Length: 325
Image 1 (cartoon, rainbow, N blue to C red):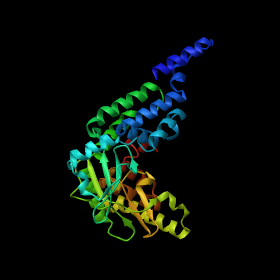
Image 2: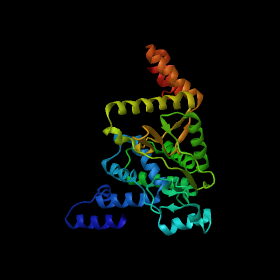
Image 3: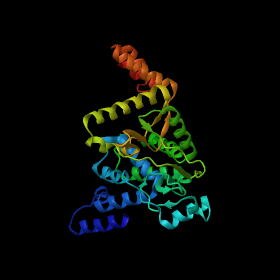
Image 4: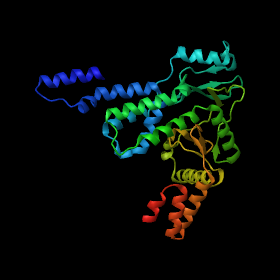
């Protein structure tokens, strides 16, 4: 990037123009380099980019939006040599004996790891989620480094406070990198959703390890493609998702917080919704759950005072702000 800025600056000076460091930094070539390098950093860079894009919304510049848009797409997968070394370190030299088939090319790659399709000898399809080497140990330093880069670039508006976002990113990434924690959340969802509307993957305990999460493969297509289904089917899908949200908030007090459409599948054959990727699951404190109940009740009853109290309980309003409303 520095080299590109020097070259472009020299060109502008030769034309009698005064170069701007900001304009030199935000060339399409440099933006492409930034996005490409950050995508190879995977965990910290991708997650931080995703969270900034959701948190800052329209406040961020078009140039930064272009970078973050690239980070929201699939990450660069591991090289085959690196992947094979990882599989051998976890399952031994004869790791392939565990399967009748194992696809080395992942069908999904995201911020923390990539997912492969495999089959057991009995034909059972598996989704094998493999964590990128070193992601867990580098989270704190990578998040700080990417935050520093974004601040120095001037791409972020002054009104966007990065400090809380950086700490939240570190915490969320540490949880998402904990596959044992994710497996425990999956089991909790299985106990909560024992019905005919949803499918939750089952964990293969014998093959799952610290950096590898092995689950039964769930059939279906991303739920956004259900837009082509008949109206009654679409209505039922929406009813089920609203029901799930309310149960998560008020009964389970446990919520899968990643809004990525790819984490929700719809299977036209079974008419069920498949739930994937529980790494971003969060436990909802009781006072937050009760606060939302009070807020909804206050809205129904048109009770302004109770609504303000509930908003304070949830954390939407600070005490001084609530008093001024």
